[in-house]
Image 1 (spheres, rainbow, N blue to C red):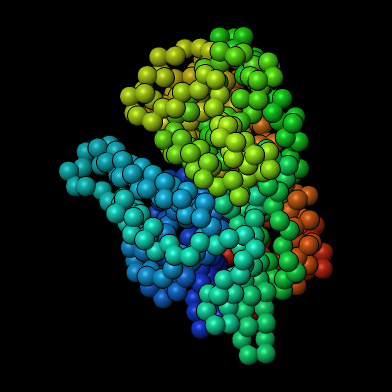
Image 2 (tube, rainbow, N blue to C red):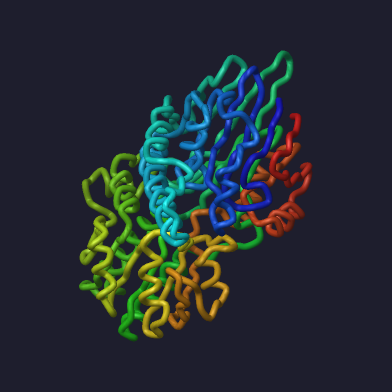
Length: 458
């Protein structure tokens, strides 16, 4: 059994791992690298393996850094089956099409900036994304075991990260040898309101696991919710807007959910106008209604009772471009959730442009921000940032609330790894320094931090 690493190696995004065993080649995730513009060339570079030789893709979840290069994989020759949960399949549809449209728009903008008459090519097109969606085959159900090939079986179990997310156990039998490898995908943060807690992994010979928050412990969710309410209340008193850069999958829905609770409990004003300015987040919110099997007991009960858990009394869904532009005329008293969470693109950049320079406004970060992103610059205290070719001063109040994280923290990651009790632990999907500190805490296992392109035998 051979395992090779082709993304999220000593870095956070672009998860992609290849297993060669039982006569087949199976890819675990095929994600986009996100962050600085220098990563654009890396996304367009060769995969490090032949896409046409891959027999199957097992997709852990629909975040762009796990599924975002599937259209490129298909465009370069992949003709196998993509297996994921039903919820992941629905979410991947909107995520990959949205990414294709954004890449097309960015290609046009770059050509315009350079004054070029030659059309610059996006990484992939909407047609490529649709072709990739045609490769989705069997829908995995949590706990069921699927035969990938004679001698190879896969089991998806709930990772509790976003709707439909899974960790995957791969069991390979070759002759008298049997190996069990668990791929964590992204492991969720326990005790969150929308999803069930992540399921602990089975015993394994090896694990390939994320380390996003492998050096810190999250603030409890109740304290984080209280902090969000406080940030909103303080901003309203100052007469400003609250801008929340929001990941479309999970975070947008979670923030809407707790805002609704705050209004129902009288903590926030009943007339609070809330704008969800993200077509993808709006679509993702609707997909929640299709999959109560992925949700917490409380949320599933609301969905089955046809009670919309995300319907804030004053909520406005902004799908159209002109509706988004109109929000720039609101100078105070509104909460605006807009994509994307790291502020590397999307509508939130326009709202930041109009609010960062205003002392009465606030920017509230409720998710991870990778190095090199606009969100990270603001969180790290930049006095000014560049947006749309101009320098924008940062005068707004900046809040960072990490208890909303969809990722497991240090203690949860340690518990997950110890439950698997592997002989070998491969650390991926994290900053290199964080990986190293997390690895130092592991005992009774060989800890490895693979580099891109590295091959290992199991």
